[in-house]
Length: 363
Ligand code: NAI
Ligand code: MG
Image (cartoon, rainbow, N blue to C red; front, side, top):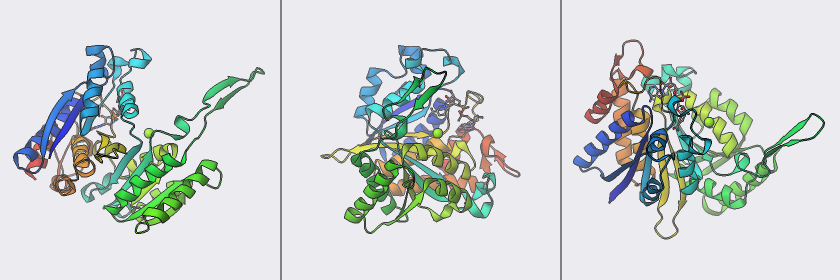
């Protein structure tokens, strides 16, 4: 099948790293490994400059029609004073909301060639391959009431509310179990049932779903604070970790640092599967931002962006073997000593964004 991709390169280094995705996609097409129909549009500051909004209605229509959306990065100092509702991040939030992307997938992979860049010892992270599945549309970031009240005695009271319904927990847990089956078949569910009612329900719903539909997958429950500790002690004990919006935000940032570099990390956000076609809305993007400090210099690391294309092949297009080949090519280039500046080390050869794209294709 031909995959309909919408590329939203965005701001800063976004267009530079997206150009390498186009290069890789064109090569895969030519090699007969995958077939793409590519459209492009604007998001973020560049969309604001063109249309006065961080994403146009037309781009939203195209995003909904696409099989997958790839996004570069949004934002930068140029748009520091645009109106709040038109700020670059609003484009990303609109995509997440309108496509109902409730499942955020953050892999943390540590390539052996980069193990020394981690904040931890080589033996702790070398060969690490874990996947954090974070609930993205519920929980304390969205629950009502959410307010700051004036108590009238010189005191104020801030209220955020953690809310989770059964269906929200069930659908994110189902994503985690399904993904575990394609990996090492283990899910670690994380909450704080010892002090939070939402944690009690979370554990109950995940356990019941496991019993009902995923008995073949190993399931364990870890309290979120203990999991944070284990992640820096011995992260290789995990395969898939599923957790709520708040804990997932923190735990995925911890996991990111295990791997050493921001320029290496892709991510995915998935919506519900259509009951008829089975198709899921999906947005793939690097974890890093628009890196205004290096934009326009041709030195940005395109690996997180190219890794995002690999994730699209794996999770939207059922082409895991092609995704594996991309990941192996990345590992091969790193092992050969070719690096962009952000991951350069003693004895490595520093190359630019385009040469990294070409080297991955050659490998
Ligand atoms: P950043 O991720 O853009 O940059 C942090 C540091 O990492 C910088 O020194 C940068 O040069 C470096 N870096 C990041 N990606 C790199 C790559 N691919 N290759 C080489 N070096 C890389 O985060 P920062 O500086 O906090 O934010 C810059 C802008 O990006 C802000 O406007 C921020 O709002 C936006 N941002 C956008 C995100 C998105 O589009 N999803 C996510 C995070 C930040
Ligand atoms: Mg965060």
